[in-house]
Every structure is written in structure tokens, then in C-alpha cells.
Image (tube, rainbow, N blue to C red):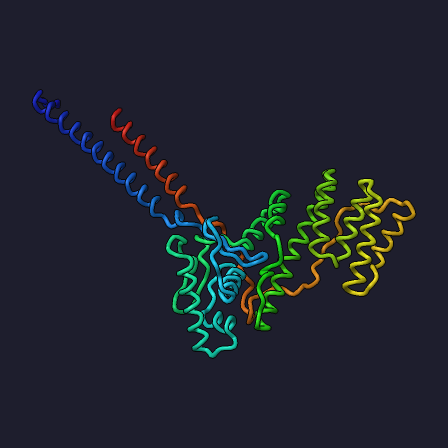
Length: 353
């Protein structure tokens, strides 16, 4: 049975439908502008818009604010930052830090010195530097969202394991770990020496791999440069000297190869009062008699110590280095763009519907 629909009721129905459609469009417009304003506020006041701090631990310990200049750090503060960075950004107990850095003071006095150190550091960094440390009453850690540490960056690049990132990592390792800091305490000094050796071994192994890669790809000049860096990094290791000697010989630079052997002999005699080992002497004899040295750019680079490096006073090994600080400005902009597109599609559907 068909129902009679009057013209007036049709008009009311049409107006109601369009009223709902118009209201929905208005609401969406208001929502869009509200999102836009909030995103802009978030971008303007995001912590990442504060100056990013860069902590350098290879060589002299330096804390830099967004490339504008180094922040002056007392020696004890340098030790504090170096140990926090070593632990991969993981929180360290306040009592442990206090006893390590002020071992000559009583427990209460050491804790007071730590509090004073933290206050002075926060004042030096200033509000524009963001939150360098995350601290509560029990523990302290570096804030990976606000600080980029060169040792973390070095190990992240090695994890990527490509010739390009290995070359970048080698460029980051400009000197030994905290080479410019002296230690009063034997425990802290032993920890630093172990970490320094670990990082140097990683760099040495990377240079050896680069030299081998460049040799295999017929880039002998690059291979020789990597081998020179090997010898510079640790002149007492004969495998580095042998790698460089072979590369000189392979590239037709026999005179330089023979000179490199003599340098190796002089260094070993002066520093260790020993003669080169059998493999190095045999290589020299082969060159001297005109025999081509066996092929191969880099030899095995076994670490001198197989003892894993752990934090002081035991505990679990240090975790992987934190990822670089997240750029929330870009994340906010990308989110805003997605929301804009979604709202635009909804508006078009409503208009067409």
C-alpha cells in the first residue's frame, strides 16, 4: 500500500537532510582549524626545537649546544657524563655514581657533591638545551631525546655494516675514548682503559675490513689509506704493518713497502725491544728476493682480550646504543598532513552525497 506524501513534507525532509549535511561540514571545518592550531603550538613548543646537545667522548670530553659553542665542564662532570654514556643511556644508581666519582669522600658528602654537580650542569646547559639528564631520587640517565653521543653514533654506524657507514664510523673515532681525562681512582681508571681498548679494537677491525673491501674492488689507493690508518691507530700491531706492506707491493711501490718494514722494525725495537715475528720477517724476505707477496689486503684482526667489557661492579653488559633523537617536528607535520587529507576526503564525500 502506497502512502501519500505531501509536497510540504517533502520540503521539510529535504531541509532536514541538508541541515544535517551543512552542520557536519561546519563541524569538520572547526575540527580542522582546531587541529591545525594545536599542531602549530606543538611544533613551536616541542622539546626538539630546543638546541640539541652533542656529547663528544672521543678525545677531549666536550658538550656542545647545537653547534653554538662548547659548554665548559669541570673534570668531575666530564667523568659523570662519560660513565652515563658508557652504560648506553641506561639509568645508573645515584649512590654508585657518587662513590665512583668521589671515592675519597664519605657517603653523605659524596652524594652532596653529586647533587651539586647536577645542579651546576643543569645551570650550564640552560633551559634552551632541553633536558640533558633524566633523574629521580634513586637513579640518573642521559636523555637520548636531547643528546647525541659520538660513541653511540659510532656503534650505530657499525651495526649498519656497509662500506659507507663503516667509513663514517672511522671518521667519528678521531681519538681514544676520553683521552683528555685523568683519573684519581684505580677502579674508574681500569673501567676507562677497558672501554678505550674495546672501542679502539672495533675501529681497528673496521679499518681492516675496509682495506680488504677496497682491495677486492680494485681501489688500491683507498685500501692503502685505510691500512695507513691501521698502523697509525696501533703501530705495535704487526698485522697492520704487513697489510700496508702487501698493498704497497701490489701497487708497484716496492721501495715504500721495504721502508714500511724498516719502520715496523724500528717501532718494535724502540717500544717493546723485540724483533718482528716470523710472518713479518718472511714477508720482507719475499719482497727482498723479488718474490710477489701472497695476495690479501688485511689479515685476521683478533682482539687482544676476549674478556667482555661490563659496567663497574658487575651487572649486565651495556645495552645497544640508543637511536638518534626523534624529530617530533617532522612527525607532527606528517601527522597534520595525513589529517588534512582525511578531512578533505570526508568533505568531498559529504558534498557529493
